[in-house]
Image (tube, rainbow, N blue to C red; front, side):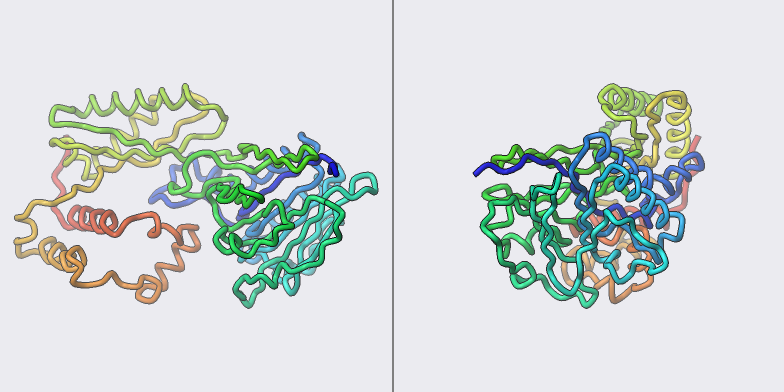
Length: 415
C-alpha cells in the first residue's frame, strides 16, 4: 500500500541561550556575531521550512533554556513559531536536558501550531494534510528526574494503517539502537552538536547536529536536515546549511628554513584557497596550528610573534567576503621538551617533573568534575563540557607541558 509523500525539517540543539565561545579573546568586531549567531542560525532554519513548504518541523531537544536565555531569546523563539503558524506548518517539540516542558515560562503562551511532547508519558500524534492522515509521530520529552531510557518509554499500539512512523526523542543514538520498535521507520534524535546518521538499515536513526557551531571543536558546516519521503517508504536526507559563522582548522608545516614572512605567505595562500572553496556566505573563523621544526616554531610559542602575524593576516583580508577571521595561531606542542628543563631547580623544572608522574602512568589523572567543580561549571556555561573528551590523554599532557613550560619560561623579546 502506497503512502502519502511528505517532507519535514528535523532540527535540534539550537541552544539559544548559548553564544559562541571557546576562544581566549573575542576580536572586538566579532562580539555581536558571537552573541547573535545562534538566533540568526535558528531564523535560517525557519526560513528553510517556509521556503520549502514543509509539512511540519520536528525539534529534538535543547532548543532554549529560558532561565539562562532571558526574555529577548524567548520572545524571538515565539516569533519564529508564529512565522511557521502563519504558513500552517506544525511544530513537534521533544524537550531535552535544557528545555523540558516544565521549564517553559507559564506567562508566555506558545502558538497553537506548537505541540510539546509530554515528559511523564509517550505521546502519539497523527499529522494530517487536508484532513487526511499522512504520518504518525511518537515522542517524549526528557524527564527531569533523568530516568534511563528503556523500551517501555516507546511502547505503543499501532493501528495497522501503514502510516509512516517517526520517533521523536532526545538522546544519544546508542540508547536507541537496541530498543527501537520496528514500526518506527525514522528516529529524530537530538543531544549531539555533530550531525550523524549512525543507523540506516531497516530504519533510520538521525541526529541533525546544531544549526550553529559554538566553538572550535564544532568545525565544518552546520544546519538542519530536510527529510523527504517519496510515498514508497524511501527517505532522502539533505543537509541545509544555516550557520552564519563557520569554524575552520588549518595546519601549516614549517621547517628550519621557514622565515616569518614565509609563514605569513603560507597563511595568506591557504586563506585564499579557503575563500575559493567556500560555498556559503558564513563568516570564516580560522584556527591555525603551526607544526614542524626549526627556530620559527620556538619563537611562535611566545605571544608577540603570534599577535603580529594575526594582525597582518587580518588586515590583508579586511575587504574580502565572506570575511576570513584569524581566531588564533598556535604552535603545535612539541612531542618532547629539552631534557635539561626537567633537571633545572626552578618552577618550570618542578612543574615538568610533577607532570612526569602522569605521563608515566604512576599517577592517574584527577577527576576534574570532583577536583575543580567551579572550572567544570565554567566549561558547561561556555558549551565546552565535552572539550576534554576530544583530546587523547597523551595530547592533553603534551599541551599541558608545553603551556606550563611557556608560562614558566622567561619570554625573550621578539624583533
